[in-house]
Amino acid sequence: MRAFERRELIINKLYRNKKVHVADLAQDFEVSEETIRRDLEKLDKEGIAKKSYGGAILNVHTNEDPSYSHRHAVNIEAKRAIAANVLDLINDGDSLMTDTSSTAFEALKKITEAKKNLTIITNSLVVLSEFQHSGHKLISTGGVLGAETNSFVGPSASHTIQRYNVDAALFSCKALSMTGGLSDSNEAESELKILMRQQASKAVLLADYSKFDRIAFVKLFGFEEIDYIVTDEKPSDEWISFLSKYQISLLHNPAE
Image (cartoon, rainbow, N blue to C red):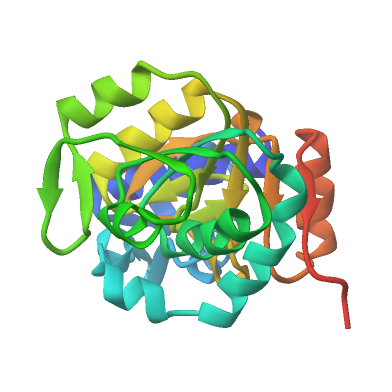
């Protein structure tokens, strides 16, 4: 068993039991306790677990779902850098699906100014309100409106998304992990992101530097489902090598 496969199983145990013990894991996987400690150290750095005496506990922050206003204020300059980098992926006349992320919102600011005759399908109330006079065609998913998230979710939203085939899906997530894939904190919105990806010819993930090497509560999908990752800073060489194995095109600001 390879190291990342073992860590994936440890993550599953953490979500089921909320805690794990070094001695038990070493016995289960037939490896040394020192090997397990290294695994737990990596999961600690990724924000998945917190090391404790003799083992580790699940990081409770993996299932936090902050409000839209809070998300919009965090790393705003990084999100604007991402917005500038995404323009080359969108053409005049394209049809798009976008989620409720503040990163997608910043990207749409740039895209709607630079491109013509777009069709934008979204479950974001903020996007619908902000761009209603942009000259582009907007389609709301409809559904149940969340007061804190400013987003539509539920069966009606899912049904609308499945009616359309689009050129690109633009979405963000809360966390990227080499062992855990893409993950987020809101289960209802995660379901819509999965559907958006299914309906799109290309999937464009918008993720600032703070999302790498972390994990969140709800698994979205693996890296094989992503065509482009647009970020603000050049990731580590390990990440670049990892993404190249999945033939993911990486766009980022030049290194200073």
